[in-house]
Image 1 (cartoon, rainbow, N blue to C red):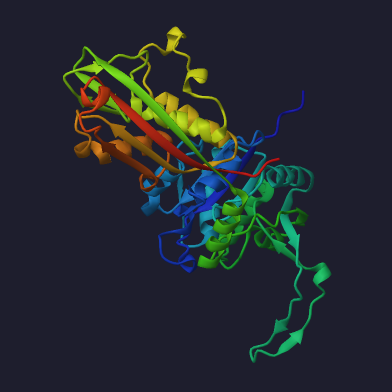
Image 2 (cartoon, rainbow, N blue to C red; image 1 turned 180 degrees about the horizontal axis):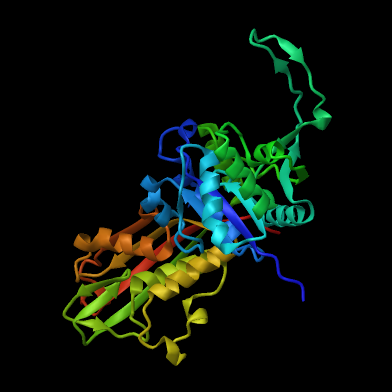
Length: 393
């Protein structure tokens, strides 16, 4: 039986990204509500042909890195160097113990790499030993001198824009990087240039125009607009829930344990805020209601914590390629008093749903002593959810 091929990735994320403007290193800034580095790493971490992802980061960014890529599988980060070239070598050395056959080297500032490009990179390196993704040049290119005058017009039919991931047999690119470092060469602009200097023939394969590098503030603005256009199906759903009081010493409201003289009479934990919110999200998805997904007749939901219901609803949005734009809950009760806990509840909803707290609202009102809430027999909640989905027929 043929030995299976091991493919590893070096994800270069140690740069400072000063040309991208204010807001910290560009790889940790959000685009479309998701950190750039998460988008870049996710494509490799979830690819079935990739066995290891080796990030290379600035040691000063370790806390930001850990927070930005939470939930993704990767090797312990290697410390980056003063140049991109030095950072790549650090990543390659960190991978040496794994002895991969193929390595892909990718810039974390390219967050829109597709599974197709990754597969083509692996295939090309397996076949040729060294290959890079390229896209054709569509504009006419001019070569100018120091005076700014045009000296030549290259044939654009032969010109290509180089992208990453650049792919190589691991042993040959590691040796090439080691030779360059030993010879004091630190002026190469990409890994293909090092491979060429080392005497390798570098092939090309089809890249992707969407696999662009984020460099300037204008790049971020353009990509934000593109992502927003892709999620043009804006939907709003509403939800309502009510639970009566029974014996107990606390109630769960919006994921927060609130001391009270009574408890809820409910099959689960009775969290009216989260239940209403789940119904609002499912309503926006036109995907039934909380009872159809978590029937109270099912014993396994007896006493269940409602945070799992909200996580489930959010996952239904994500599975459709969508995003949550806003979540709002209004609680109707005389007691307990919600005002002092409002921000705590907002933070808990944000934590459960993975939505920024600025997109979560919790409000409270009374029924002016009228009805069952006015008689303090229970609590009611209304909710609304606004989501964005890709357009579909």
